[in-house]
Image 1 (cartoon, rainbow, N blue to C red):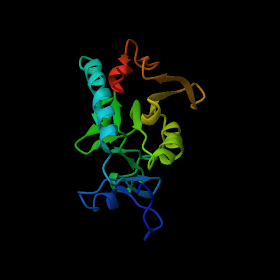
Image 2 (image 1 turned 180 degrees about the vertical axis):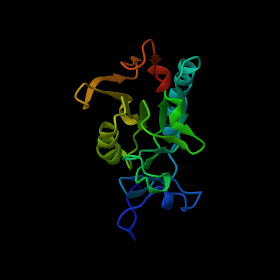
Image 3 (image 1 turned 135 degrees about the horizontal axis):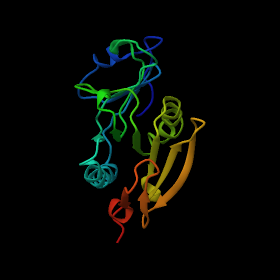
Image 4 (image 1 turned 135 degrees about the vertical axis):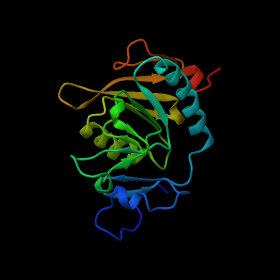
Length: 194
């Protein structure tokens, strides 16, 4: 289940995260650990792949890179050492346009865009804690996918550094992005609408 485990410490860091078993997926949000087991289901992964392909093609000849989960995004509060970072998340899809944020461990710093595909066990965290986390850290665009509704909400960081919902797209729509001009994704192919 996607909930914090019984705490043995007041706050956890990336150093703790690196000690946890390799066969488990974890996130730490402002020191609170979340076990992401079990692995995502078939529908989640089908949507992930169907969305990843057009994104990868779009960014192929551009300066941005696309990464599917598992991919660690470390969000430092300031200039603390890696081991002291208290937030490490694994968005379903991460887009990074500043290559200086990339290293062998993943991304250290704020990505430009993140995508989360909801499941019933992760919806509360993705819609509240991660929403607030991404907004506070300045992720420019946040896509939230509702598989059971075949819908995607897109939030764009406005001038006040607050998320503003730009659009809800449905299965027969062509998705576009405020952040990335000319990006178009046929959602019938993502949600396999016939």
